[in-house]
Image 1 (cartoon, rainbow, N blue to C red):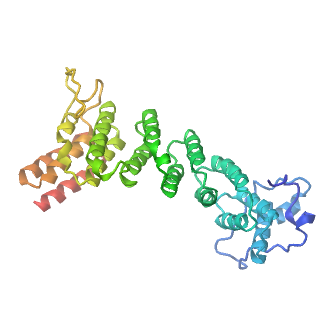
Image 2 (image 1 turned 90 degrees about the vertical axis):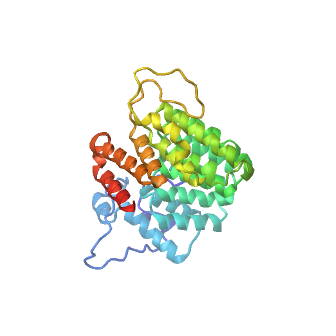
Image 3 (image 1 turned 90 degrees about the horizontal axis):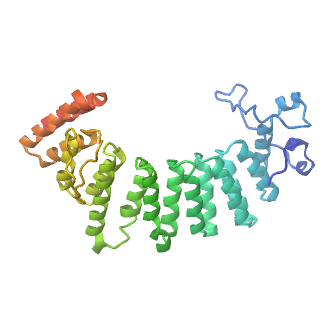
Length: 348
């Protein structure tokens, strides 16, 4: 949209009617704005002029001027895009751009096309995704948005902003057709990287925090499905903290005791047997060949089961497991396990 930066705004005829508004700073500001030097390569502008009035300062001076005047026009869109490309986290530029888009009824398809580029380029910049949401509230193109997010996730599968945006799209439009394929999408992502905590978090959002979309009468079936699914993934990668956290989340959200899965957990708290029994158990899949056991997460889980039972004997068993973590299996968190022991003994 913006023309090649061949000159400062102060040297452009089409901006001659605007008086730039400099950033207000005292004679000796405590924290002066340090404008970047990397954007000082405009052709046709001598080095002395550029050093005195760098392009990012030039552009933001003109932005302040149009904001003060309340101008909303196509050239303001060009200016805000320029400022945003200089600093994609410039919240004020984004906000004024959105107001201008609405005021002049700028084609939303054109704005989304620009956002496709900027979101791809500045994945970790919150302001980019916030502006995108504002535009989507006007455009109502949800299905295309899920496809876009899926494509972006191929480049960074753990980017918080991308996953948060996907959840916003699902929740904002709340269309059954959109939700219908989401678990399949999650399965694909987990199969690609079972240790991707962002995907497990998204699965919890889809299955439980969205309201258990299968219906309250099917909650028991959904919980059983999720427990089996999680156990199977743990059996494939026992030391995957993401899956263990998900297992805890399913139990806590549905107010089920941790002992519900005690039978499954116990084999993961001891060394792998020399001889494995060829057993297919959907409810309680055993560790696979080559599993690195005992598993720290399983030992912690088992200790919490004992503590939950709230009997002195059980607390003693929990203390024994915490000691094994502190002294052998997870010494890097020794202080934490000692704290757990202290707190448990005080509660007896």
